[in-house]
Length: 243
Image 1 (cartoon, rainbow, N blue to C red):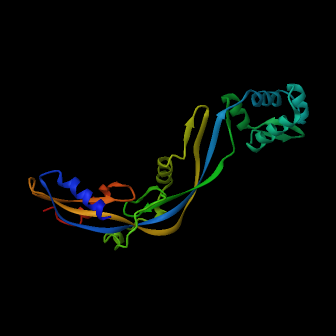
Image 2: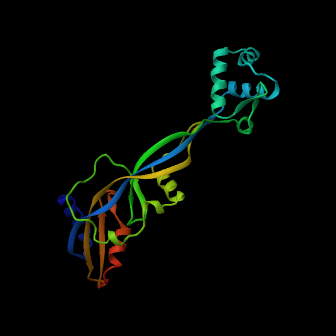
Image 3: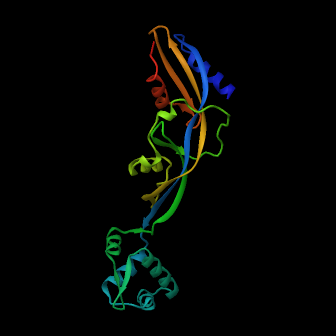
């Protein structure tokens, strides 16, 4: 922490018009949260699945063995593929005959196989001072016994106040979606964001004086984000005069 503070001091003082008047360390209160969500995997439909869907659509067939005979494929392979399509809600049985669902028709026409949603979870950090999810859980965090940020208690925004769009943006920033070749994984639904624990993230604050412009301002280094934190700087500067 001391070596980091000295490094940041040197960075600020590289500008000859800036003077550091004082510095301090404190902890940014964050909540460790678990976000539950589902993703959908999409791939280009293979030719056998297309042929099976077309066969079911055109012929009154109930037995997968007949489909296998019609397409000249192994019956076990056809049964396995049919089970997969049923689980994906592409095919259903009605009056002892297989038929395509609306979803099956749509996927056949598009040529894209959409697998059933997968349930997933991710651990992230929420800050009421930022009114936002900051980032994904990190394996190693800078640890130090420090006092909490003195302006944190004034922030009334709560985890429950986060809307779905904010949670979605946080998940997208964590790259829960991906696209590679014919494979695409997309975010489907966000189920919940649940509190796990609280933590203090060490931050380094500098009170800086610009003697050319005759003004004072704050710089804050957030060790969780590993960068200068404009939101925290703004909160502090709003509480004190600039001169």
